[in-house]
Amino acid sequence: MNYFVHESSYVDQPCTIGEGTKIWHFCHVMENAVIGNQCNIGQNVVILPGVKLGNNVKIQNNVSVYTGVECEDDVFLGPSMVFTNVINPRSHINRWGEYQKTVVKKGASIGANATVVCGVTIGSYAFIGAGAVVTKDVPDYGLVYGNPAKLMGWVCQCGEKLKHTCICNECGSEFMIEDNHCKELGRDL
Image (tube, rainbow, N blue to C red; front, side, top):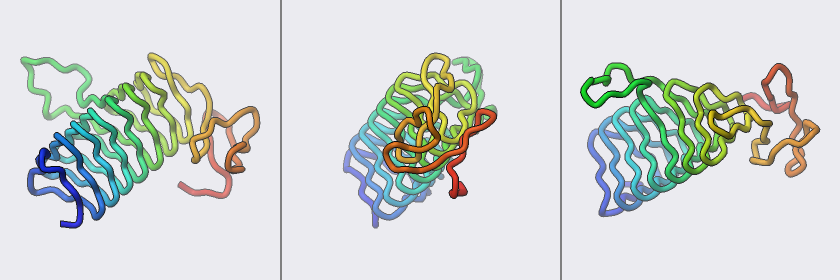
């Protein structure tokens, strides 16, 4: 076994867990989940059947990753953030066949206590503010927050908010912004 699972956690088989991944206290990884290399799964996390996590995904404490969620490489899921998997849940109606796909693209960060409604795509390197309620797609490098979450600006790959120019003050990366889309110049995602 080339990954770590705390003795208080459960890992159902079959599933795939990559090299160097750490699964901490009171977690449950369910069958057919795929977890990449060098991931860090915090305390009290449940990963449901069929979930796909890329490499270097960081999941903070108290997160449920539901069937239909796919996180690409380098995604950050903040403490107690929430995914949903059906639009109109009812206790007395089985909606297992209605789970919707939610994609969190490479390098995106979702803040503490944010809610991501199923069926959306969070763009590459997007930043979701703490407590936001995401009800629609977020573009690459988009900065959203509020309830419902609204596009409030743009962030660099390094996580710094882009000010009035399209050059990151922190790392010097250059961006082009037009028609509510942001692209880092010289980089293909």
